[in-house]
Image (cartoon, rainbow, N blue to C red; front, side, top):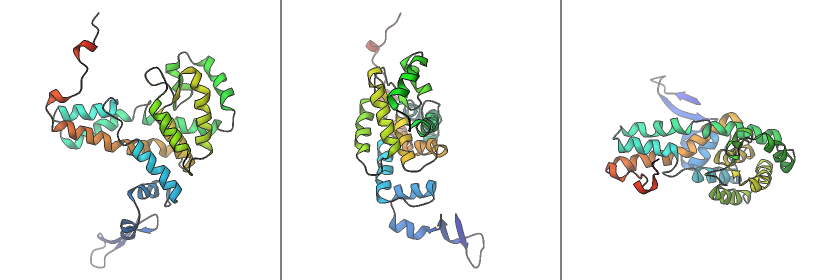
Length: 245
């Protein structure tokens, strides 16, 4: 960030630059997607990079009411917490080791092993995994969702693989998912996001932060929506869904 001071007051800027680009010119010429890419990468994206980065932003912008981070924001809204707190509530949950906290390990895992045969790697890892539900601890970014692969993420991965900016990391991770299929496992969201970010040139240190930014809009929107509804609108399971022993 570079600021050009005004003549009369050196503490008030008359121009602001981001990574060398005039902010006024950026406002009129680039998208919000490209601006976020610039902030974290230091350069504006190519059209192909922007397409993939934008896909990640849209894919993750609404995790849905079943997601724990969204649920936290919704509970804040239902409890009439101040609106400014909905997003911090949700992000505090999203930052757990199995969500945003898993993006960095997933990226490091993919970066380390993407030169190896994915099928052989799975055969090596599986005997060390106590249960498939714990797979993400040895194969970060991949595993099961509610006892099976995540079908929606599989569709997203297929669409992403057709984009020009999807590269070697995405291809290897896709091969890994194919090798995991017999174990009813596949993509987890941190793994899919991580593979794409590696192909876009981001370091693993940035991954979890970008993941939080991608997911933030939906978390805030669900909290705000719930704040204007009666508490009875909170989607709980019906009594018949509970089993009392």
